[in-house]
Amino acid sequence: MTTTLADAGRMLPPTDIELAAVVRNFHSARVLVIGDIILDRYVTGAVHRLSPEAPIPVLRPSDDRSTLGGAANVALNIATLGGQAILVGVIGNDPAGTEVERLVGTTRGVTAALVRVSNRPTTAKTRFMTGSHQLLRLDEETTAPLDAGGSAALLEAVQASLDGADVVVLSDYAKGVLCDGVLDSILALAARDGRIVIADPKRPDFAAYRGATILTPNEHEVRLATRIEADQDTEADRAGKMALQATGGEAVLVTRSARGLTLVRRDADALHLPTRAREVADVSGAGDTLVAALAVALGAGAGLPEAAMLANATAGISVGKQGTATVSRQELLDELHLADLVQTDRKVASLEDAIEKVADWHARGQKVGFANGCFDLIHPGHVRLLSEARAACDRLIVALNTDASVKRLKGPTRPLQNEMARATVMASMAPVDLVILFDEDTPLEAIKALRPDVLVKGSDYTVDQVVGGDLVRNWGGKVVLVTLREGHSTTGTIRRMSTPEP
Image 1 (cartoon, rainbow, N blue to C red):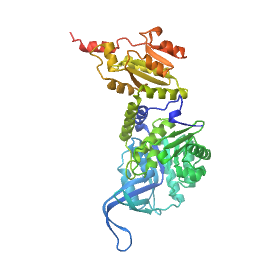
Image 2: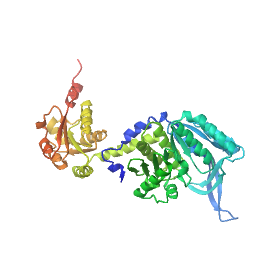
Image 3: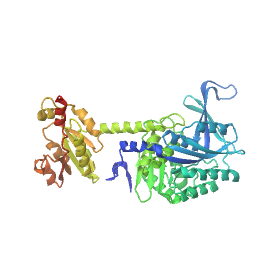
Image 4: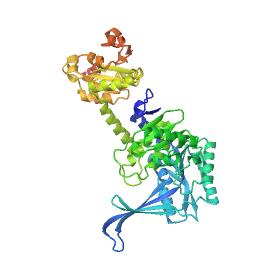
């Protein structure tokens, strides 16, 4: 069986506001990144003609820039998200290696332990661009395994850096740094010290990463390793389980491009997360960004599902940018808050839409609660009422009196805020799942239409006085009375505001 966020039952997923609280703790994450370091170069210019020597464009360069790629890009993303990164890798004794050192040295939040190997070039990829179009890519590299001296120096740097990290990322780009002896030794060291290990694989045999806690293959990589197409949820689940058997780890996170992510864990249903990308400009480096966000979230204390959701959101931002791009902590917070605002707007529904939503919740075995009132000015008494109401059910609907209804009940000077303002504020409250408006003096018709399982009112009512209470009890529900905090009421607050001080 597989589940999606929509049908996760009573284990409700965290809201974006709750995820944002994890992001604010990213500064506590300490991540050791080990793997293939790449220098990404971009030569950009204009093309106005074809060469007379061959049918190829002639590029006149106007800009030349370099960025950190591969394992170094993972470290850069960790730092940009607010975490602390330790980068261990190999560079050559060449200008590209010197440029990598310069870039790392000027990156706040990254501490580097770079091993220079004189007989090995720094991996460099040079892209020739016009506008957003790539004309040519030049790769300068070797994929030969590290020699004995390079392996020993790298492992020495790993041992010296391991104590300063909570999470280890193995960024494998198949350039020979994470060769058999090195990979086995790192996994053994991390296991000895009880570190979380995230392996971003490039080998077709996932057994090479046995001992890693989490494997993060993309759809193509998992297909090569398992011979299972992962474009459908059920197949991605099956491929992830096979990969999990090969590694002996705790989880496999399959990245599926436009189809989002699939998280496969031991002794748990697969979790399918739809992509959060609003537009796709370039997927370059998105995998590095995702792995970095996953590592920082875990290092900040998030559970694996929450970390996967944050990684998904971060990758969605990354693919909307041109080239190998990073995502800042503030960008991620802005995305989470934007999505929360959109979700808040979606919480305000018509009675017809609410009936359909409640039917869906009931079909999933969820208990639906119902509370009502004017809620003109939200005060601590309201917060307590909503929190205790939500604790008594799986989903909470709040029915608000319309402006006309409030005027009839409270007088011509009320409400202080119009119905849409009150609905927006109510929808932003974390315990509330749905907000509706009713124009009658009582919510009786709404209660009849929605058939809630729990009816919630303040303790200034008795059970017999609660409108609709007899109906709810007749169909097997219950009435819950919440003890109100003394001194908190909208009428009292307005009275104090309008009474001049002596």
